[in-house]
Length: 181
Image (cartoon, rainbow, N blue to C red; front, side):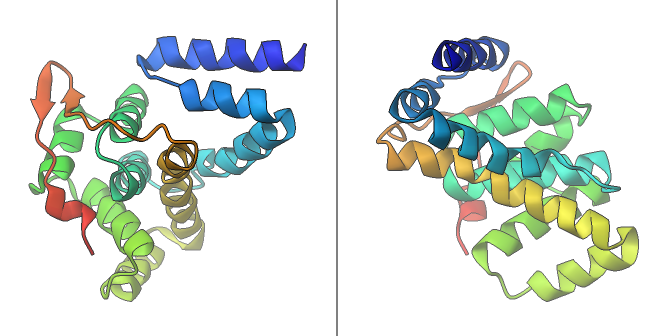
């Protein structure tokens, strides 16, 4: 019965975001306990604390971008836009173009955190001074959990396709140098 509920939940998620959740169905079939642990782990990234919306969403997009070449970046972008971050901001981040300061800071921090970049300490200090330690934790959790979807997809053999990211009615060519350290 619980497995049926999980599959129904995943199908709703797939419909809402036009996303292939085959790997989530497989995870539910393998182990309800594993699916639940994954879901609990992912819920940590939903805490926004006092982080600005655009910074928080951008950290999630950065987390997906570090690990993925399309589908997870697409869903992170769709989720960001669903919570109010303008598509133009997401497009600019993915293309490597300048955008609003909050989003850029969240995006740069998410990438630096996950890639272990040299500028991590400076970005961490900037965020803490600007928004406080709670915002720093929220951005960190968002970036960390956003990378988990592509990682579990790779683990289960479902990360074989690349795609362009669509923001609104426009295909965005992601600047591939943003994925590199």
